[in-house]
Length: 399
Image 1 (cartoon, rainbow, N blue to C red):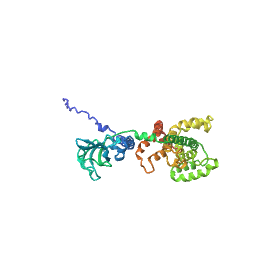
Image 2 (spheres, rainbow, N blue to C red):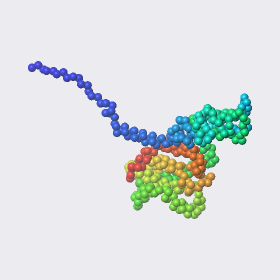
Image 3 (cartoon, one colour):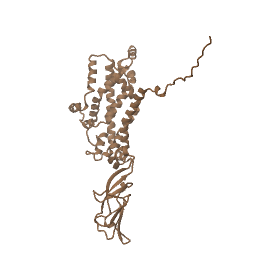
Image 4 (tube, helix red, strand yellow):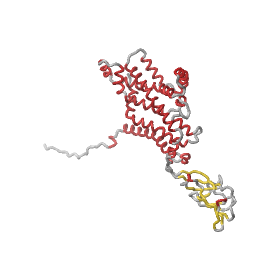
């Protein structure tokens, strides 16, 4: 019997498409993270752009319009009769409505009253009450011509609509950096921040080791107290601590308004978070290392200084960033415990004084904000590789 062979058509293998290979959940996660990064970065970018904008533009438009022409109303006054000259039998007064600081603006409309300031395009002629014909050009120059001699004690007021081209400058930074007392305020902020960051780290490191690896009665209660103190608002505890300090300080001959007081205050406010973070991190360290060290005769102090501290550096760096940022940007505690004298003002207090109690000089707030965050940015980027690792470990590990 003959073998029957059936020829099957060559069917190409079905290749998986690009969309089938995409991990849509992972892609969505990355897009969400990108959105959050942009969301947090956008205000900082806007602050940076605003800090280098011209003051006049900053007061009338947002940072997103920094590259567009800004429209603003203004006014100027012509020269009086003393400036007139005789040309071809006519009396002429010429000049420019724009001051030296306003050069570069382009006028689009003008007028002589509040109701007509935008009724006349530049290049046209109007008739003032004093007579003659007044012509204003786009660059602000004017020409006032009359058949009779001018008799003006004051020049004619001219209102206009000006188009201001984008202008970027460092004048805001120069104003802040050259203001009186800013150098002293920088020194005061460093004097407050550095000890107020180091002192709680030292105390918290010893306390965290004791709560993590030393057995003693009441250890669990102390851990619960530390956790409970995390939720106590600073504003609620500020006055009691201040009263306690004012009662105790004279006993030891310490002034009420002093650096020691603000160091102790920031130490007290920062210790609960520091102890909680470091204790959880240290409790997650390998138990075998501690037991081996104890078998070799090492004391708790030896284990703490030679083994636990080096291994806990990520957690220490994480808290150092938190504490440094908090103390550097603080105004409330510094005002209460240090005062507002010219020699005691920290950087945040100095910037508040520059802006004014009524916010009259608020335009320099953007440049002042960037000047104040320069040091925290340096600290953060120097320690940021330890930040996430120490923060996560301190949050999820327990002992």
